[in-house]
Image (cartoon, rainbow, N blue to C red; front, top):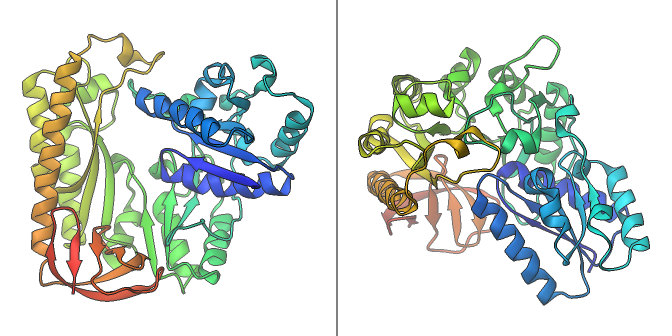
Length: 423
């Protein structure tokens, strides 16, 4: 065994795991498992710790290195684990020299080295720039993720991620275009732009280009790219060029996942969000006029501190008012050190019950979307021999085996409540 990477969390982490794998292998590491963690909820941190213990039981000879957002925000938590040999920060994990230093540490440190010796985590707020990291592809994935932005300048009261990722910084447009061109040359038909706060793209670059400018440059200069997709965006930051690209270029996929978080204006203020309920609804209406076939997903938190039943009902109603199809529901998780952790908390049983109701609402919305697709022809990017996703990111079950990583036209003949069924 050389280097294995276990990835938790977002698409950005998936992209970064490929950079980690390459740097660690070039540094000469062997018998090493890197756990790239997520810190978005306390449950995510718990799952990472649980996975580390399981990995060590299953592979007692492997040396375990922990990195990612949870390692950045809670380095001591992981350094105190006897299973862990090294803890690397979010900036260090992307640098080749950090993996060379990690190899030297693992070679000289016996198993069970002191916790303080294990930690290589710097001040993430001191990082001012980010650069493209050229990769040839993502192992086992039909679509490629490309990091164009990292960090966040906003301070939502529930969110720990800025302390794991630092302030917002962007990859220059030319470097992004070069990376995407390389991936297309390697056979990727779909590329997903990723970032922590994607719609803040360009704020630290000369001329402060916006995300829409980047999207148009990619579509212009990578003519062979068949599908371009965006990860989660903040609708309040969507610029005119981005909306124009949605209206004018079919290669930009008609699917947007929105960082909504709640449907009640007072809760949105207490979250320190920058939009109101009416803004979210108006944005969805505007994009739907420009691109009538667009499908929306959204993140919504259930059980935020001070949330009453009436406030929660407005989140339920937002699913219909925005016409959401793909819902990501997060039961509120108090992250130590955040303002929301100090607010009056909703009872845990109520948080779970509201999350269940919100998920049920999402399942109903998805079923409605799936039913509307029956009889339609869709272009599907195959992810395996028997599955893929449509332009709208809707999962599809294929009745006949097809080569992975190709785009095919299918006719939808039914659905099972979660997937479309192709003829």
